[in-house]
Structures are given as structure tokens and as C-alpha cells.
Picture 1 (cartoon, protein in one colour):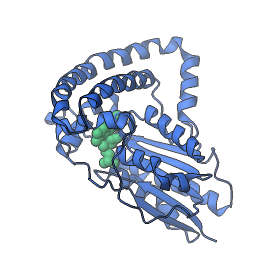
Picture 2 (cartoon, rainbow, N blue to C red):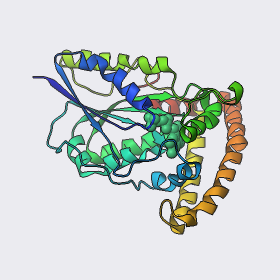
Picture 3 (cartoon, helix red, strand yellow):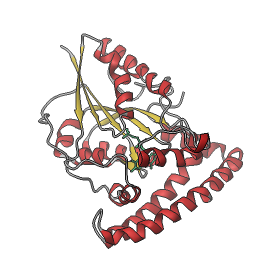
Length: 308
Ligand SMILES: Cc1cc2nc3c(=O)[nH]c(=O)nc-3n(C[C@H](O)[C@H](O)[C@H](O)COP(=O)(O)O)c2cc1C
């Protein structure tokens, strides 16, 4: 009997779809594997490129897991899959809203129970807290996370702070300002190289081996920057405070939110340009004195795939 894999995905620029395509190509090439795709479609599509204030306006809902309705799926929920690949991008340190909507759906409750799941993330650089939320939800639903792949933008932590927002608000990848801000997005060769994960899964399935936590080990599926752990935690706390205020002012896209969002934009850019580089520098400087804690953080956040 054929092994069945379900891929759940959504992408605005097509970047995550490209990663999914490369990942599953070896599985689709196998006669013994059947791959089904489920594209998440919000009833009211999110804009792309994003008008700047609309881009910011989405953060309270992202942070508070308040997703928009999705179009109905062709799946009923009683289908059995040997593996589910959940591909998602990060929006404001949270899983993107279409993915949150799926994870909260009745369909997810039925499909994910007792099923091995691999998460595939393609984002700017900060995915740790979003993955914590996905992990918690998968656990609630009785799914088993057996692997995680995280692709991050080639511009690096600092420059992608500018490159990625420019990309999603203009629709152009750059480089920008004569090369001062490099090209946004994941390096194309890293996307192509995702086929190695599909190959590993194909080998396991063909050998009738169980899909468990060692599934993607030894493939450099993730890389952890320990300097980002506390930045992400602090960012998440700040988003929740500002998010609560904005949600109290009015619903998404209401005019009451706009002045506070404009103020917040200035605050955020100042923070990104000053406090974050400084805190990352301090983290790097104290790193030699916190080796054990950093090693424990790397092991925790890189699980189950590991960095090796
Ligand atoms: C509203 C919004 C918020 C984002 N917030 C983050 C973030 O907090 N961390 C991150 O690493 N990337 C963030 N990104 C970048 C996305 O994760 C992703 O790399 C980019 O939107 C392209 O994804 P897609 O074309 O596959 O949809 C954000 C993008 C958008 C549109």
C-alpha cells in the first residue's frame, strides 16, 4: 500500500511554496508514496505587497492567535496520513495567521491526532517563539513532532531587519539603496537543497521504518543563534503589551488603531536600530561565560532535528 503524505502550506511571495516543492520532489518521484497538498486560503486574502500600516496592523491578531476564517478544504478530516508536513512562515514572532487558523480548525483536530508531523519554516530569522507555539498546539492536538526544518534569510540577522520589511511592503526583493540593504529572502541554493529532507523521508518510508524524532538528524535542518533567544522573548512580551492596547482601541483595520500604529512604527524602528544590535553584541561578548546555558538552549530549540 502506498504511504500517504499531506503537505499543508500557504505563501504570499511563493518562497515557501518553492521550499515545499524542493522538499517533496523526491517523495513525488517515488511510486510508493502519494503526496496530497492542502493550500490554506483565507476567505479574505491578505494583501501583497503590504501597505505599511496594514503590515503592522496584523501583529495584534498574530500575537493573540486570532485568525481569519479559511475557505473550506477538500479534506474531510477522516483521511489517514503517514506523515503531515506543516509549512509555515512567521508573522511577528508567531505562526502566520492562515497557519494559526488551520491549527485551530476542526479539520486540524481530526487530521493531526496520532500523526507524525514535520514542520518546515521559511522566515526572516526569528522563528523560535513561533515554533514554541506550534509545538504546544501540536501537543494539544495529539500530534507527534518528528522533525523541523528552518530556512532563514541570507541577509543575516541585522540586515534582514531592513531587507524583509522592504520586500513585503514593496513586493521587491532588492538589493536596495545601491546594495546597502542586501537581497531579502532565503538563498535559492538553500531552498533547492531541501530535497535532502524528502530523500531521507523516502528512504525511511521505503524501508518501512518508523518516522520518529531522529528523522531529520544529521542534515543541518536548523541552526540556532542563541543571541536571538532573549531578543525573541523580549519582543514577544512587547508585542503582547502593545497588541493588547491596539485590540482595546478597535478591531483590525479600524481607524482608531492608526495613530498608535504610526507611533509604534517609529518606536519599533528605533528599537531595531539601537537596542537589538546592542543586546546581540552584549550576548556575543558574554557567550564565553555562559557556555553551558547556551549549549542547553541550542539543544532545546534545535530539537528534534538538531543542528548537526
Ligand atoms: C506581516 C509579516 C510579519 C513578519 N514577521 C516576521 C517575524 O517576526 N520573524 C521572521 O523571521 N520573519 C517575519 N516575516 C517574514 C516572513 O516570515 C516570510 O519570510 C516572508 O513573509 C515571505 O513568506 P511567504 O512569501 O512564504 O509568505 C514577516 C512577514 C510578514 C508579511
